[in-house]
Image 1 (cartoon, rainbow over the protein chains, first blue to last red):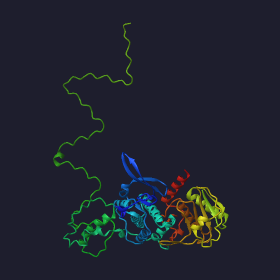
Image 2: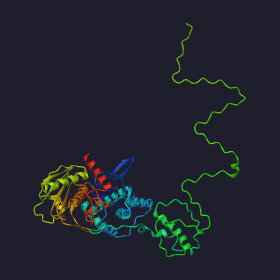
Image 3: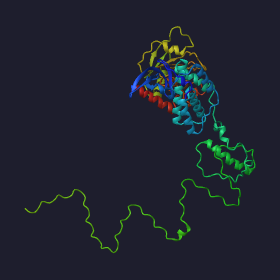
Image 4: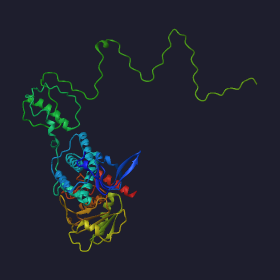
Length: 322
Length: 170
């Protein structure tokens, strides 16, 4: 629930923010009868294009309608945008979910978080189309609310935001994926070496045929465990951890048979057992319609049915009595 | 239609080239619509917002976009978060923008950065926000790399501007 919405008392002429729609002005509050029930409706008109929406008064809070931010709120937003704290999640699903929540329920700070997060992410790599659209929407909503809060033109509001995001005279920094790594991602190993955890490198029974993780965050978890194994083998704890896909572990014993490389994709069909090998190989399956069942040998061969003629059936011949 | 209105004298050939560039960028006609006068008593550096409100002698239709071109300096805007360097100013989604060539030598020698700034201001008139792509003309214009880029839009901004222009035409 958005903060302060519990005590939201609206009057005609108030400026409010409808989540994902922008700044609206309350045009009317009136009682209407719908399906036999008398409901109080708040009519809001979007300032941008004059679109009108009517919301039952009881739903105002749950929808997330809130009053326009104050100047103090905007200053807080600027200090948040100046800070270098917010890093977008590299897991796109998690990021999309978080951003959706921020857009609908996060208030003006949520909008600023979306803008800042995606802007910082774009310093690592270009945004995909959907996120670029989301960034544009969030920026538009943020600009219009800041403009409404400060009582200034939208161009000035946007420039005041971008002076913070893109300080004059400075280029945007290039980010690396390491900056986006979450501290919680390395919780599993707790910086313990393989020896301390009582694990030898060769004894790690990890599934080596896992699908490659889509996101580097997951990679880092795997990396941690695999590198642990390598580190314990070589006995060098100080080797710097490499990013990216680690090289496959070499076999511990040179003389031993190297394990066959596992193939990707669908596993092969199980081979028939040894007993079945002695039996005649099954005839290859023929494609197409199966042949008709033959009549039993003892039965007399039936007369072949006359071939069916196509087309309209012939007209009945007139009686030959005449 | 884009109408370039000059507040100071400019070379006609350079203006024709400037209009061709705007036509190429937006796909709508662009022409020099003659001179106009800055409001009396307004001294350099000019207040961009006041200039847009009070400029006289601009003749345009309702859906035209007017770009005022001047060689006089514009005053930097004092905003809540700091001072905004101002080479131009446009109201989001409205019909008038102003651009100064004061930071540059002239329209001929610094044609590319001036055209890039013009695209930026006209893009604001067509409701484009600042872009994340440093190659795009909608990138914030006070960044050091802005003047080195070409006068082009990124794919996202180009498509959005085309969509807005289509909507305006229909």
